[in-house]
Length: 68
Image (cartoon, rainbow, N blue to C red; front, side):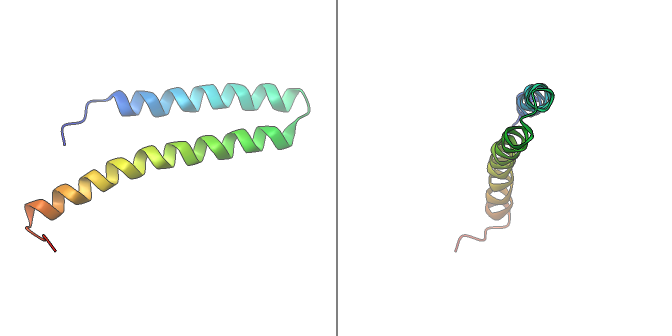
């Protein structure tokens, strides 16, 4: 479970791109699409973080020998 900071940069990149898209769509008057873009990006980032948390729990499980 040796993670470098690439995941942090990926999440930051998604955040920057989504912020720009949200601003552009809102300026164009497409508020609904801007909200959908933000929601989809949130789900993508949540999935990325959930995979890391799953790896963490698997490591904790193997350390304490909860092989069930």
